[in-house]
Amino acid sequence: MSTTKTNHPATWVPTAYFAMGLPFVAIAQASALMYKNLGISDTQIAFWTSLIMIPWTIKPLWSPLLEMYKSKKHFVVASQFITGITFALVALALPMNHFFSYTIALLAIVAFSGATNDIATDGVYLNVLSPKLQAEYIGWQGASYNVAKILTAGAFVYLAGQLEESIGVINAWVTVMLIFGGIMAALGLYHLRMLPKGTNPEAEVGAPAQGLDTLWDVLKTFFQKKHIYWYIAFIILYRFAEGFAIKIAPLFFKAATDQGGLGLSTSQIGLIYGIFGAAAFVFGSILAGYFIAKRGLKRSLLILCASFNLPFAVYAVLALTQPSNLYIIGSAVVIEYFGYGFGFVGLMLFMMQQVAPGKYKMAHYAFATGIMNLGFMIPSMISGLLSDFLGYKIFFIWVLLATIPSFLATWFVPFGHPDHHELKETEQV
Image (cartoon, rainbow, N blue to C red; front, side, top):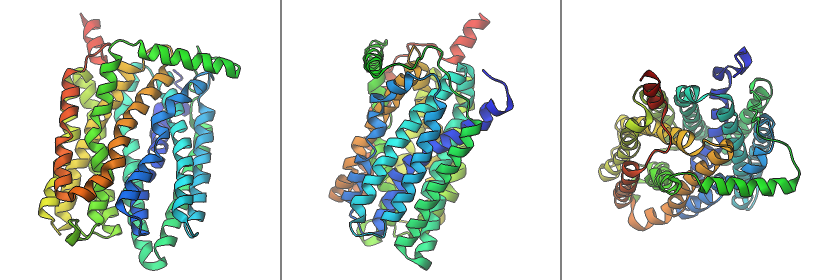
């Protein structure tokens, strides 16, 4: 690995994974509140903003094409520029008639370019960093992704809420979408200079026909991995409950109290996520990296699963009690976001160390993250319909029941490769 200043992980891991998180969260959460304020129903919001996220699930279909090229850097930079331009087009489409159809189509393009950015960024991470450095930086990777989540679903939502009062709902969200576009374009410029190439010495540029051969080989070798079906079940089920909760939570905060919600303003929701959630999210992610490095992933995984899933109970408590005190609501979000940040990095490192190893590290990791997003997307698509049918109180109790499969999957999942901690113990013996 290069030790030059510009290639040091600290100069590109945080910004690269921030750029990965922003488009995903903009579609998964920020756009949901935007459409809510523009008068779209919860059922339509949950269905369409989940459906257009399908590129993050099917991205393994084009990851082998990226695997053919030695350098992944140009895919990262190009996709970030495309994402920035498309966010600007979303902003231009919001004042139009039939804005919902136009912006959903444009956000689908954002999802495709964002998924491509994910593939290439992970390719750089896997090819540039050693397993030891991967473990050391997994916490910072998760923290940076979560900073994007907090800013996108927190600070910028708060900004939108403030602007709604002065320039109107449409102009407020036009401004926020333009900011998203500007950030992504600026990150593309930064990574054009600072990002290492992420070279895969086994990759070669070939003809399109070779891409089909590569795709077949990637598919075949992925499903030939030891314990792969256990891994698929684990990856899908780990985030199963989150898929239900994450889409509805901000809509629950926004809904009027007589509808079972908390009746918060857009600015208050942004404040809760941006202030109360930010520090907890980042602290949980970074702490998890050191926790895993000390104990090893295998010994930590059940604790990480519990940290990820059990805090969803705060939403059931909020739905049952409907508090009006912002500090009580914010404290609940702190608990949930700390647990989310702490537990999420365990899944990411599991995919890196147990699923990705082999000839096609980038493509196989893309397969794993695609499967992970499928486990998130399916419950997310039906969450609006289910919450409308059950009501918020019963819905969030259902979310708690939906965590049970993740605990079972975590308890039984086998490890086909020793983790970094086990390798260290072997070397000492």
